[in-house]
Length: 229
Image (cartoon, rainbow, N blue to C red; front, side, top):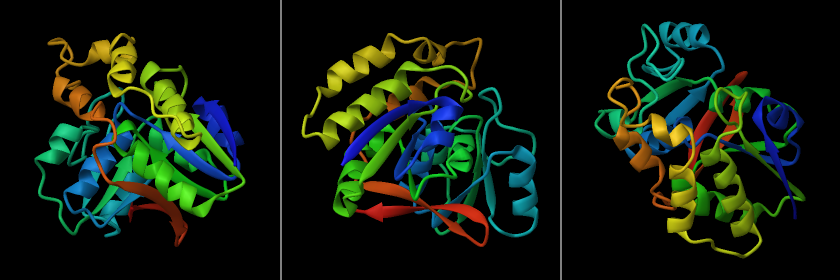
């Protein structure tokens, strides 16, 4: 198995084999929490307008996501693990749009198959993909708005690679490196209440959720479902 590491939008566009599109703060932590609350599936879209159109067409009941970290007008929930942990979403179909994670999934057109990645589902993701034993795994850290590398996504990518190669880094060490990074400083800032400290803490619960999240194309849409381990 060849493990490749990439970053940002270009990394997603160049991903081959089985792609893991990483968004730790917060898209794919939020998605994992949503599935743990009983969501049936999540439709992933790059644009806010598309999410609203799909909800209006009855494709899903709930829109969640963000622009510049904030809940877009007309959305039911922001891109917040904490919000979803309190939400009654069991059995629902969600539609998610963010400025990094879902954009990366939409851009990964060269990949044979796609998983989404975050620290909470890291171990489960590696186990799910290892069962399939693909020739190539492309790990893509999406960063801030898919434009600037971010410590949490880059560290998650390295953590995944280590797990694939049989090494298990210290959770505390990974957390410390991320907490020292620029993106982590946004959370808990009273001037930016949409960046909850609870979201940061949720995102750093490494290997805490025992399923992976795989994306397939269904009726022209990118649909994420959980994969039990």
